[in-house]
Length: 450
Image 1 (cartoon, helix red, strand yellow):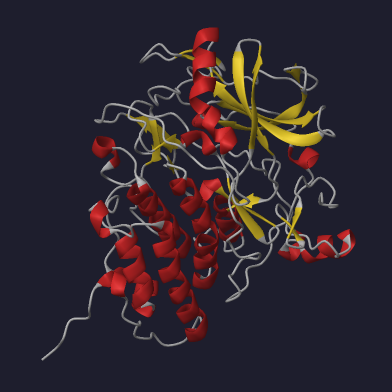
Image 2 (spheres, helix red, strand yellow; image 1 turned 90 degrees about the horizontal axis):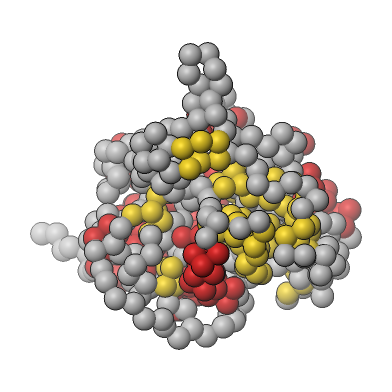
């Protein structure tokens, strides 16, 4: 049964919408009131499942993703099973704690009124060099060639409202600009005008290259899980390729962190520990599903997890690759990517590393995580929450261990430990005293003292 909430594309599963979380029997007006943002705040004009996602740049000084090489060679395609049992909790908090819902916007309300890319965000998609900047008082060019590598760049939307992509997807407007170009909102004329997202697949006029790229990425359409954004199709328009995907309304964790800073006079304001842990506990089954299909997500970070109502969803599958793909570019973000990826390639263990780093950013002001502590955690004495919850520190230290063999070996393993930590955090309370954690078989036997 389809969700009756205006603008929502979800379906009712187990009595709740799998997108916005609306109970089947709950009146829409009551749901809208329950999901209103505290203080009457509303999503910004850039809200949605789109966001900028991964960007193709080699700059290590910016919060962006970059493709890197891999020292491995050879490739075979694994056999994957489709579908997944609904193993995650229906609402955030796993029945242990509660998380405030995030507002769900009408898709048309998030269209950019003036789609443009600020000059300080213009970088070459290939080498990461700054392009399109002002000179001698003249505004920067929105179209041209990178002076460093001569790669063509364009920050002008390729699709305009009214364009009909593949005679099916009517473009409504631009939502955001990402590493592969603009991201657009469209409506699917063949499926009840449902809202969809069009994201640039590649920037080339080479039809053969496009067809090869589609064949390479077609497996993404096979990914079916209630916690992962759906890929519907791949489409072509005027020699440019686009991934057609589900529209997911809501707020990314990165946006929610920015909102918290704004209400805290610009000072970093991390999530309460139970809330931060709840987000990760909820999304870990999505990683378990991907890994069971022979797929690695590669580029997890707060940007790529959307909260919609009281549910979450993993978005931006642009970095997902097969575990035995040794040739494709690897997407990762400095500060989140595991240190061994550049030489050994991505793995289940490297995904675990990104999950641990993301949780750390949600929990405390992680200064130097892209420089001094790019491969480690700061000392316990420098982080108050580590001193308060020893078990939480141990989980983070294991998830982000420099040696991949020392990390959790599966998403389920990490989730089991985090659930135990979540219970401790809730019982102890925000201002309660620190408690000694229960010994875990995953961390070895406790050291005996004389």
